[in-house]
Image 1 (cartoon, one colour):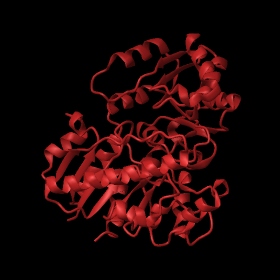
Image 2: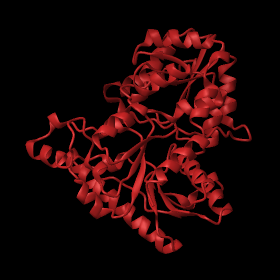
Image 3: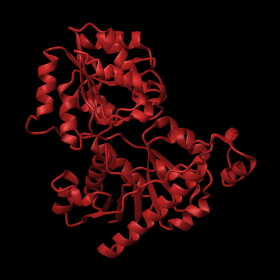
Length: 409
């Protein structure tokens, strides 16, 4: 039996879901689990809090929220924030060890991306800041590749001091002596980085998701159903940023036949992400299109979020320049909803490989509308929802976690 400390630097979006699913898997494998979560005291009757109440080998402890600094020099900002985050994680783990009386076999970080943001922090400094065995999930490995051409000579020397292989090297934390294995959701990067850092086991983890819906209907569902009036519901849900393809879907809504589709934009809107298109999207909202519904607020309850997806006929996830996986693909498969994604990178490859929906070139309004029209009349019998769900199941997660934990004795 190992003592695993699960640390989450963030609390919104899918972070609570991942914390819950990984806690369940660790407990099922017979380990003691200490969950360190920024808003633990506010979870109340949420699944993660219930796990801690029901299991003697599970603790849920609050941590200080991570608040990144904003500086003029982005490279300095990355270094400062990375140092701050490693220090905060160490403090949280040491406080939790005192509170529980447990010595952590492993600290598993549920969102490693922000720990890899600076190429200027060498591995020895990471080991000094956090002198304990660690691992975690790297969701966006493409962002850890170093852009050596954009660096000064001094920066290149610092960044590549511990890299034994040619580009694309990863940022230095991957060379930490306390890192034995690392989880990724993208098979391509698992193979790619196995050559860059052969001392680390890069493991392909399933993109697990929950599909539990709200037991009772809530006003938002009722309003969408009423407004849709039998039309095919196409939903873009989650954080509403420019990279999510909002402008593409807005243009599709303007072209689509009013009687065919009803478009739902659901989630917190981030106007600052739009650059020159912020005014255009706001003008689109202000025009009050009759085939659209806007709920531009964060949905804190995962079960309500799932209910909105379950109500939909097609899920839209044709993101722009997005090289990573999205939990929305897993939710689509579990809920047996066809999904439309961009035709490149891991999401496009996954949707095509399993036949989960359609793909279209990013920002291509005409092709996107054509793909939606195909999905509107498609027979879903031949879609690969079941195969994908099985390959990304809790059972698969337990198997991969078992392999990862074997590296930490």
